Amino acid sequence: MNKKIVILIAGLLLITALQADFNGAAMQKIFEDKILSSEDIYQQLRMFNDYSRVAKKGEVLMDSLADSSPWFYYLPSGYDPDNRHGLIIWLHGGVGREDYFEPDEYIFQHPLVDYVEDANMLLLIPMSRKDCMWWEKAGEQHVREELLLMKERYNIDDDRVYMTGFSDGGSGSFHFSYRLPNDYAGFYPLNGMVSVAAHVTGKPCFLANMQNRHLRAVNTDEDGLYPAASTRLTMQLALSAGADISYREYWGIGHDWAYSAEDIPLIMTDIGRRSRDSFQPYIYWECLNDLEYNRCDWLEITALDTLAEKNPWQQEYNVKLPETRIAFGFYHDKEFKGDGILVDRVVEGTLAAEMGLHDKDIIIAMDENTITNIDEMGELKQAKQRGDAVSLSVYREGETLLLEGAFPEISYNDALFYDQPSGAVKANYYGNIFDLQTSRVQAVAIYINPEMVNLRIPVQVIINGEKMFEEIVDYDCYIMQECVLQNKDRKAVWVNKLEFEIK
Image (cartoon, rainbow, N blue to C red; front, top):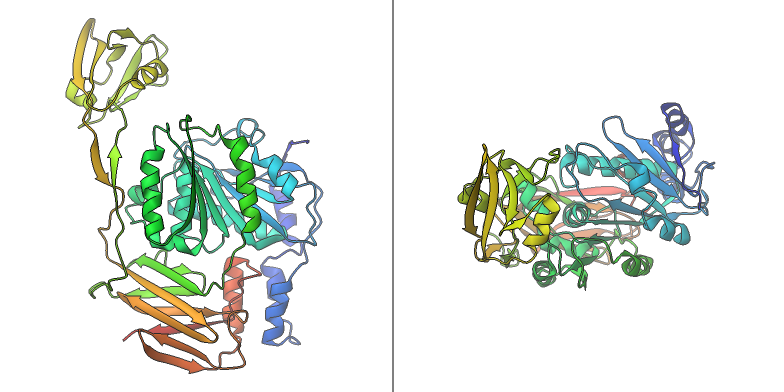
């Protein structure tokens, strides 16, 4: 397969914007057609299939947004603009870097390319930088903007968009699954941790939100960051919260995607069984008072009453995780060329600080074993356990000093935290009846689609046992236009929106 990069320059981007495709101009043309009824407009949006022919297929393409790093995508050789194709989004690890991965190093060696080629799917690979990690607003926005651009240009099946990634990419996949699931059919986090985004952003992780999409998570037993002994506990906890998760482990592997050849075929098989159901009959959704992540599919929480008592079914799920990592607590100077490890900065409150390690010390031995670089220290640390004694020989201001200490004993900490008030809704519909139960929620909205209900007969809404609404619901062109412009989604076209204040 020829995998050369095609750089899309600004002029080509302008040409793309002028093509038919599913962009604002094409949608505006549909809405301005005076002959079409509201129902006709809905059908035109849902059946839209006017996508441009492409010259480059079977190649990795590079693009960029105005304020972000380049991003990459792959069009399979069999891409046909007349047919809808699935899309996989891959989130890389090692977020928070100043730069991005070089294409030759990262893209060409990515094993997913061959699999999406065989499956006739597209692959989107966003690039994260220091200011746009996957769980921060900039990172979320970049991923979504790139996805929407792909939906504008290429015939993508909205119900077959999937997210996966390794390490921080796995943690990012967890993050999208319980905060921003609407665009996706399933999530496949690899060697990530469900609570990472929560601890970094300070916003709790609501495990029960993960029952709205399928997840297939993988971890390894020798992973120094997220060992299976810990992640297994969080997966059990998520299952107790009702999450739709399958979990797999590989043993004898560290924080490494060494199992990719065995696992990718399993991921692709699972993907083949999954499609998004935006009209699922049951939704549980929980959010904070800032309403930043307040919607799942047809349900939106629009106001909370955080002074109210929680209903018993709105639970806080938690588990104690063992802290077994072996770390001294210092940053080394990566540019140092001499033998040993030059200490750049000692972190307060760590073993390194307790032992008396100073900035600019040069570590030359650990437990009397000579060290010439950080990798040799890592190998020695692998033989250590919590509670073990340890010594460091350091060179400081012309003399050699021996520093002694012991790694702390194993400690147990909460996996999750719930330090901010939240509200939740349990909602289901059957026939034309929507039945909602709320906890600390003051207002909600319900989005309507004719595949969910029969618009020729009244829609009934019951909230906390009280009938709030029973009327015929018609198509609303303003709601349709607003939703489609925002989401570029031809499958989940919302034709009306019902809003309710809860007494």
